[in-house]
Picture (cartoon, rainbow, N blue to C red):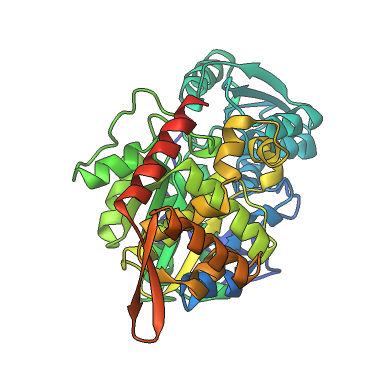
Length: 439
């Protein structure tokens, strides 16, 4: 199945209708039988508190958790299942690490089609629950979604079922480019657009959307695209850093952000090309940074994102600290799915999973050391970066105790007292990291 949407296929160059996915029908493949649950038209949230905490002028969160099944994959599902109905298919098969399967299963239920979903052994239980409730037939195959994709491709060839896997059906890119259309209507063109990378297709699709807007004269530029992966599974980031064209294979991929746990990204080469073309950047972040970012977004903005989504904010913090993103820049982070689907974080918060809980329940002193390991700062700023969840007097008490133990040192800079981590403090952090590897 191949599809390429050229400008000659557009029926008009104007958007029309209510602010939903199907507002952009003229820019999409022709569909006769629309299967919809009211997807798209998601909120672009101005994250003022979060922006203020990291020193950024304008930060926006494209909140795809507002879609019917709680993720951006509903955009893919509405177009794919509509196409399947048009072509008189009775059964849809897809490989998924969670969100896509939940979406395809829901839209198959709406359209009256049977749904066969292939999942890896490592899948979020919350997403698996959605599959079962929507009536999908679930088959387990392999450790990660790459293994499941092979099985889904085999099933489609053997049975003649409709292929609903986003990596194997290019209509998914046409669906996801509507995110760019919406952001354009809500904001214009941001300076940076930060996207989590699994297969790499989402980043490519969003860029494609902006390119189409440029071709029809609605914009004259595109955002600089940032792709984010987890440290334990970063084939696209490694290709970017090593100045290679294709993703670098990962032998033992690992991360709690299961939605971006993809060993061989189908659109990885496209993603690398787009990042370079837009003068963007590819960056990886640790699971610890991801979990911390997830909690901050929930606490500061009331948005509970899944780990893969929170990785975008974790990456933004890293880029701000490195001076790559300027405080005057306008940034959009894509929040792809709800944290209610990813039970690892829920289990960690309730202390049911010791390994995740270690990363989440950092002591205040460890948090202070980690902040100072990123750069010297003063007490009031530390209080803000700790989330202002304790009194400033309590923060200064921790600072005094750390200083007494030789883990930090203080010095004057103008009228302020600044704090910095010592070599001993750095050794303590290294020891903590080593300990976590054993738990």
